[in-house]
Image (cartoon, rainbow, N blue to C red; front, side, top):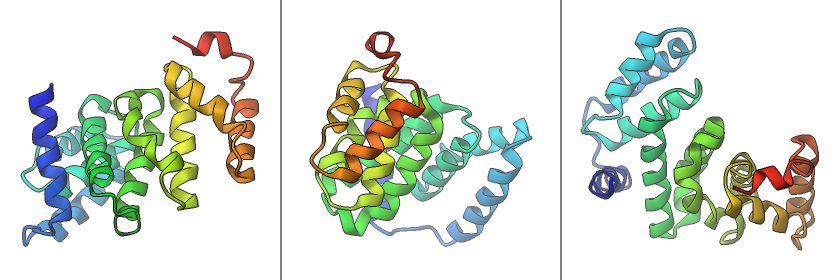
Length: 189
């Protein structure tokens, strides 16, 4: 798996190096069409899976994001989304990369507990920056992981006592609405 993830990281870096192929726009339009079709078509989901192995990192990323809307094929899509967040974190340029990070985390949110491999890549967005929108989606991803990860469970509990009132209220609201507070002993693996 480390060799595969290293390869994914290379493709993710290519996204930020803006070396898009000339036909990228046309293929992105195709992915957007497939995203809608994938809701009802297994064939469309399989075609998106093929795009995850494309030579263009941008195409890979958008195919993974499109699959997230159906919560299908997480074993293929989540590593791509994780690699993009990893590169965003390594670059340390929150403002410049906020759109990529936001889309990646939104897609991970769709996957729920299946996004567990990306857990550590999401954590920096809870504290290391001031973008409230990114922080909010990161909290939702962590909340989805809390039932299957003791680390995310602990972080969610700590967020309930966060100094920022908005963060604190969001975390508390999630704990109440999702019934996580009552499932605390079950949530810790």
